[in-house]
Length: 470
Ligand code: ATP
Ligand code: MG
Ligand code: MG
Ligand code: MG
Image 1 (tube, rainbow, N blue to C red):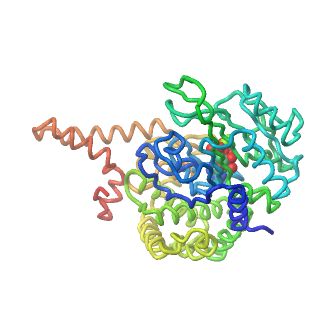
Image 2 (image 1 turned 120 degrees about the horizontal axis):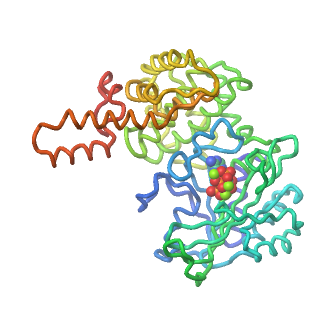
Image 3 (image 1 turned 30 degrees about the vertical axis):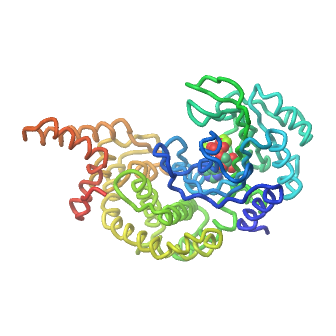
């Protein structure tokens, strides 16, 4: 079996042999981009190279970029544990051309690597193109010999990429692998496309135009290529399994959570083990890149991820903090490719232990309240937003943790009610504060406090002295 580590290496070796510079992954916290919470695609570290603001000593490159999609535009947090193909942390393999080669060469590389180097049967692959991109359609016919019915024209934004309202943009072409008709799902563009049968493995972006205010202004003088392939998804294909969570890396992590909790890794507990394995990776890599749990910003996203995993550890019956004990197996699996993980191991362990120790103190009480609140509810019912807010405010339950806890029973949360309760608490706090006189500066103080999120976890901090704004 080809290991995930071998597949990463073989991708980079292939592109290096084709003249690409081998570029190490950038950290998860993006430099010079305050609009982005975490790096969420392989092209992010190269943004300024594509726009011409920055030059590099190479015109083609390849990387395996660490990505986190747990907030913002791309939020896959809620998918984890429930689809075969989504993680909060994953690696995006990518090859890039900065005004060097274009469509024909990009398709040739992708096809050669998948079918020749890696031996994936051509008949398992389907490509999509943007509906107006006849050029890409013809190239797939010519280079890959794909029959026309397996080159699917898609008219939605899924197949048109843009850096923002201003900047480079262009059509994309995505490659899907058919895991077989024993799995529910249909080809892209069909009504069953959301199933797990046809899995998108690789997205080729053809940066071809320049746009301003979302209007295409003309062709780029030097069209470029940006591609992204999920390492874990292609590992599933090459290891002959359907599910990313059955690949070597995840199997090892899941076996460890099984061993440490004594809970079976199949059946009812499967999703919990998957969430733990996934969130261990994102937590570990985020801490290694300098993010620590906090009540605002990046640190709050990390805290949400950690607490969600910790609730699942609780479901598995863990009587003591669990997550920190899984770090050695994470380092064993991934420390070879990412030395920062080895360096940060003591910090990752200490951070997880501290967070889990604190969270366990209130978790049991919060879950008891949730059980009471849902005792008279059934499938299809909605938890009042006020209850979700109380869990958040008093027990440190991030909103999505409550949602996740109710999901297996087919229940949901009243989001509007939650938001209203939050707004009401903020207004009450403001009202209580007013009357002290200096109105303008008071307002300013509240704006800052809200921005920094000091009203989050107020109950929690009141009981545990954690109230400082981080
Ligand atoms: P999907 O439609 O399956 O959510 P996507 O279209 O959002 O994927 P892209 O933004 O095109 O994904 O990213 C490029 C590649 O990165 C995808 O083809 C896929 O292989 C991989 N990828 C994207 N999101 C995830 C994720 N959450 N976990 C694992 N791999 C992912
Ligand atoms: Mg997606
Ligand atoms: Mg997609
Ligand atoms: Mg895509």
